[in-house]
Length: 213
Image 1 (cartoon, one colour):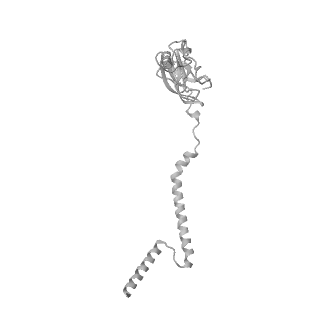
Image 2: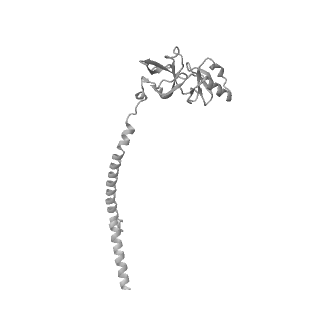
């Protein structure tokens, strides 16, 4: 029995020594404050180190966050070429960058087939509908009549003297292929026409009819 007690005491002594090495607060009342003071200093140093490392890691993100963003005008292209030029009564799709209000807008260049119209027969429009901003697409007069046969369009007769119209599939609105004016549908504002200029056989978008370049 004496040997067992001695063994238990030895294990208990080793356990207390191990706990003390781990930093467990001593049981003596007078040493508690010293223990927390020591660990508070370690904690403070550890927190400062972590803060410093974290700050270095976040530096690139902070720089990006507080750097002044690029303005819309920096993406502005005052004059850009439209290519390829479409065949008669066909279109070329392109993205228009010109003014602060019109940057990255879908647009279509249409060949009217008549050099007396537009710029040597070409007209271009920003194809975003002025109703709910759906994207319109050019349809020939025959295509408009086909659409109307399946779902009657109250403005189909207005396309008789036009090569076609820009049709909005969202609410069946129509815009003139000559000047973008409203043919019918729940809208009153025409689509925006793009100003064109032919230079040495190259066609350029240089502005919009409703505002400065």
